[in-house]
Image (cartoon, rainbow, N blue to C red; front, side, top):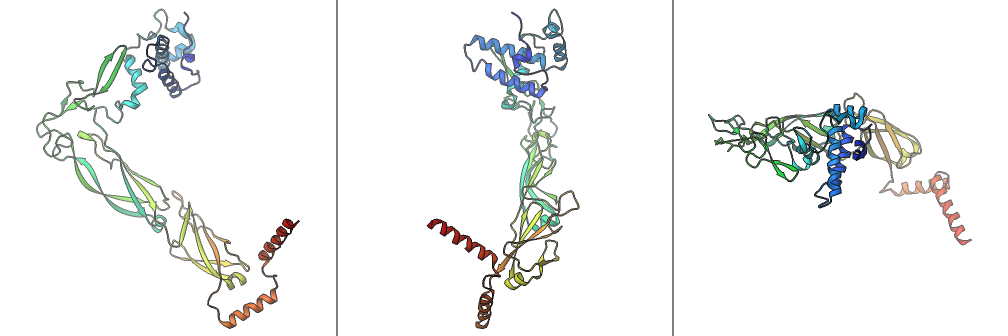
Length: 377
C-alpha cells in the first residue's frame, strides 16, 4: 500500500517551521497513543505512521530530501531512517522525550555535568512615590543557600570527590523497556545528578550548600512603576553540589501617597479652591514631587472637577530624559461659618443675579421641567 504524505500524516504543511511541526506531531501522537487506545490496532498503526513521519521531517537534511523527492528519497537505500523500527541511535526514546519531556522533568534545568541549577528567589519591596520619582540605592538582606566553603560546593568531604553513579553510568536517567516503549526516568540512586557522594561533607551533609543571610545592593531606577521587576542575575539560590545559582527577582510595589495619585507616567492632584478664586480667577501654588512649587492660573468661572495641566511635572519616564504631566483637579469649596453680614451679601448677590450666574443649574432645572411636562402629557 502506498504511503501517505508525511505532512498529511502530521496534519501539517510544508511551510510550517520546526516549532509548528513539533506541535502538530505532539497533537497526533497524543491522539493515537496506545495508552489512550488500548487494543485498537488501527490506532497503533497510525501512531507508528505519525512517528515515522516526524522522524523524517524533524531532520533538516531528511526533510529537504523528502520535499524534493518524496518517499523515493528513502527507498532502496536512500538516506535510511524510514519506518518505525529504523529510527537510528536515539530511536523511539528520543521521540518519547520530545513528546513527554515537559511532564517528566527530563534533563531540563541541569547543566551538561548533571548539576542542578539553583532556584530563583523572589523579594517583595515597597517604596514610596518619592523614591519611585527620584530613584533609590538601597541594601537588602535575604536568606539564601550559598556554596559551602568547606567542600567548595561539591558536597564531598575533604580528600574525596563525587563519583559517577553506577546505576545510570552518569547519565542521570535510567531506561526501562515496556513492550515497544522505552521509558526514561530520573535515576533513583543519584536523583538525576549523574554522580553520588560516598563521603558527604560534614558541614553541608553532602548538599554542597549552607544557609546564610547575604546583603545585596539594589539600584532602583527613577520612574519605576507598580509591578516593576528587577532581576539580579546569579543572586538566587545556589545549585546543589556546585550547580550554578538561580536569579533574584525584586518585585516593586508603590505605597499610596497622601497628596498625589499616579496613573502611569502622569500624576493627579485634587486641589480645593475658594469660591471667590473659582469665580474671579487667580493664581494658585501647588506642590510637585521634585520638591518645588508650581503656579497654576485659575480662569474665572472655574467649576469643580475642571483640570489644569502642568507639562513635565509628572513621573520620570524610564530610560528617557522626559517626564509625564501633572493634572490639577479643582474642587470648588463652599464657604462655611459665615458671619451675618457675609450671609446678607450672598443673598443680595443671589437676588441681583436671578440665575444669570448659574447657567448649569438653570439648564438642569429647565430640562427637569420639560421632563415632568412630558410625563403629564
